[in-house]
Image (cartoon, helix red, strand yellow):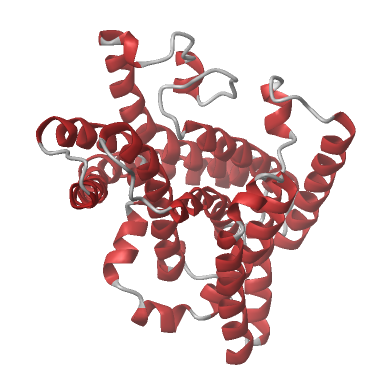
Length: 363
C-alpha cells in the first residue's frame, strides 16, 4: 500500500490552519497592548497559541517522511526534495521580506538599528533582529530540509532513513548537553536545538502510520491515537508556560502529543474529511500565507483602528480584536490565491526538470 497524496490528508491540512491561527492569537496579545488604550481583555490563554510553532515542526517532519515513503533515495531524489522545498518556502517569503525591506529603507526608525537584512533575506541564523519576526522558524525549516536531504541521499528505504534521523537526533541531544552552546553562538545553538526532536517525532508518526496501515489498522487503535493525542495536546497547552520554561519538557510534551494526534488523524482521515469544516481545511491550505502575512496585517489593522475607532471600553477592545483577526484571515486567503498559488505554479517547470534530472543522476 502506497501512502496517499499529501493533498488527500485534509485532517492534517486543517491542523496546519489551527497551528497558524494559534500563532495569530498569540500575537493578538501584543496587538491589544500596542494599539488599544485601557485595560486589556485578551485572556492569558491566548499565549498557548505560540505552541502552533511546535505543531508546525511536527507536521513538517510528518510530511517529509510521508511524501518520500516509497522513494528509493539517492542523489536525484535528494536534489529534487531540497529544491522543491526551498522553492516552496523562499518565493512567497521574499514577497513579504522585500515589502518590509522597502519599509525599512523608507522609514528606518520603525526597525531596530541592528536589523540583519542579509540574514533576513537568506534565512540565515542570526542573533540580531530580522525584518520579519517569524522568520526564525523558517530558518529551522531550512535546516530540517538540508538534514532530510542528506538522509534521503544515503537512505534507500523509509526505515533506514528513520534510523539515520534517530542517530542524528541522538547526536544532537548528546552534543547539546556536552557543549551547552550559548544563545550568542547562533549557528551552534541552531544545529543543536532541542526542536529537532519535534521534527523527528513527526517522521516517526508517518512511518508508524504507514506500517499500521499495511497490516490493517483497527478502528479502535486509530481512534485511541486520535483522542489520546488530542487530550495530550490540550494538556500540553494547559501547561504551556511551564513547558516553555524548560525546552526539553516542551519538545517532549508537544512532540509526543502532536505526533500521536497526527497518527490518529491519518488513521481516521476518511471520517475526518467528512466531518471537518471545509473552511478549516481551506485555512490550512492558506496557512503559510497566514503565517507570513499576519504580523503585517495586524500592524496595519492596529494603526487604522487606533486612529479612527479605538476606545478604552471592553466592547471597543473586542471589536478591534475581531477586526484584526478577521483582517488577518481574509488577507491570508487573498494572498494565497493571488501570490502563493501563482508562485507555486511558476515552480512547476523546475519540478519537471528535476524529475528528468532524478532519472539520470547516479544515486
